[in-house]
Length: 236
Ligand code: ATP
Image (tube, rainbow, N blue to C red; front, side, top):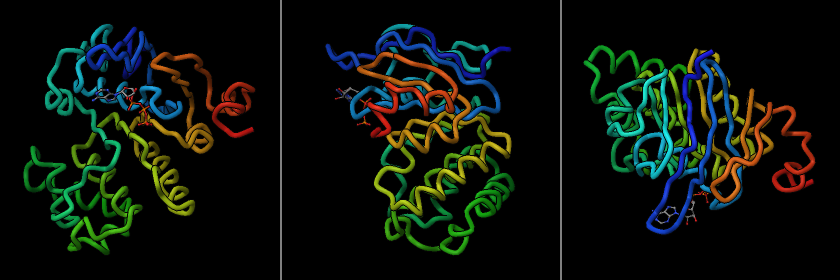
């Protein structure tokens, strides 16, 4: 099987700092794959390098068999990859609907409207708040909006960076439910999370990143029972 996303010996440097160190992983169509690791392990750097910003200092990224390592970020996004970045990065002064429109800026009017309907179907809460300024919403609602905005471009592969960071337990459970619904709708998901327990529970497969290196890979179920993972990431 050809991997949908293949990360091959990828490295990322910020000047002399090596954030991603010869990392390899793959995501197959239809999977949820979780990347876990502690603060500063390089998870965000790896995810953003897939998107072309920052640039890889070594190695390659293939998407559906095509080498995208040197492509511009907007070109990569148009290939069917979307990202919901760490910290959400929604437009606080714009309404929910306007934020979603921004996510589909390169679609025609009918496709934007269909996209917004699709997102409102997934997130009824966003429909209720369609006219509300995004900056005045709760953290959980803002996270739903960030994911919804990423879905506006109708991605085949969705990259999520710490979607549950700073949220209350009940909202975290909702976000993990939604990620599974998104996958059930045919979108492949690559999830970066510090919440290792939940991230591995919903993952088909997972990877553990430590100081930029992939140190473990296995099924989500096996990683949940792995002694080293339990000690380091699951508080056992
Ligand atoms: P967190 O969960 O805290 O976001 P992370 O696993 O996502 O951590 P990164 O944010 O990728 O880790 O950071 C990896 C390393 O790269 C860290 O040492 C960080 O300080 C460094 N780093 C990240 N971004 C930059 C940058 N723009 N310039 C310099 N160093 C950076």
